[in-house]
Length: 160
Image (cartoon, rainbow, N blue to C red; front, side, top):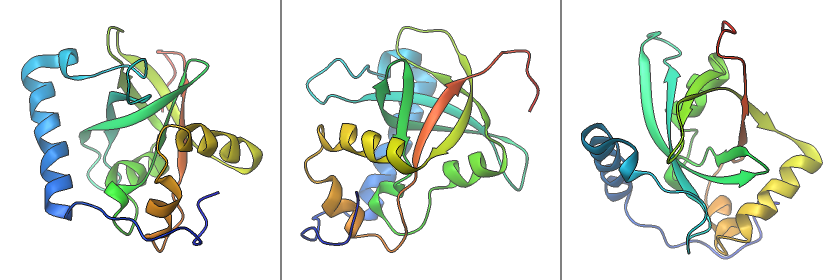
């Protein structure tokens, strides 16, 4: 899955993608959960708010991510807007996998992020591909593998 054999993808410019997600984060600060959505829509994927710990600063970092639901477990792609390299939120989670997520209509949820591998990755890649027919082409435009990230529930009192 995600091999380099697909047609090259047409993507909006990087400045537009970054501006879009920054705008979405600002809207979240102003309006809260109302700007998130669930996967039960025509897109087939939702938007969640994720709070990570900065890998270098140790500061709280916030991001809005697209996700699909895998039997109650949100699954995201560390795609960096399909630009090269890994997104900062994923690098933060590699260093500090405990995070807090917020889904539409739900309270904050403590989670532990993990990179999905093997057959599970293939299955979840397919789950995403069913919602985004250009997925393989987008992945092929990158020089790095696209991590598939599951956000497993954890006990709120667990330290990390």
